Length: 172
Image (cartoon, rainbow, N blue to C red; front, side, top):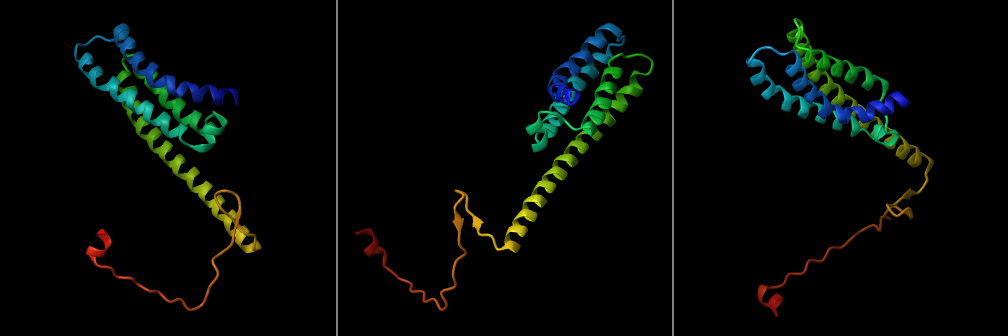
């Protein structure tokens, strides 16, 4: 649980630390002038992508309640973060790691969306199962304030009377 909680906190810090690492890595290991132009585009995109994925993961109710991510989150996001770190080394395999980091960003985003929707569907299903169980037992439904609400009784035939008033009568 300690690792999962630490990773929960790290994912928000990573949105700032990893783009800065790309800049520091370029200052240490970079060599071409075109790399600066690339960094002008890559660094803000990395910041936004890391932040959006972190928010999607944190939006799940179970993650918010436990303040810890799932082990599958640690695996997917951990691999993506390591690919970003490796891309920041700008060695002979830097382009390969940069491409893998971009593929990892797409995979991490869709993984986070999928988990959010799946967990939401699971919670809705659990709520509906509980509702159907209560209906099958004949238990009275509870209102928002917790008091029992009775279903409306059928009064039989209903007569509707419509009243028409003229505009001049309404103003007075």
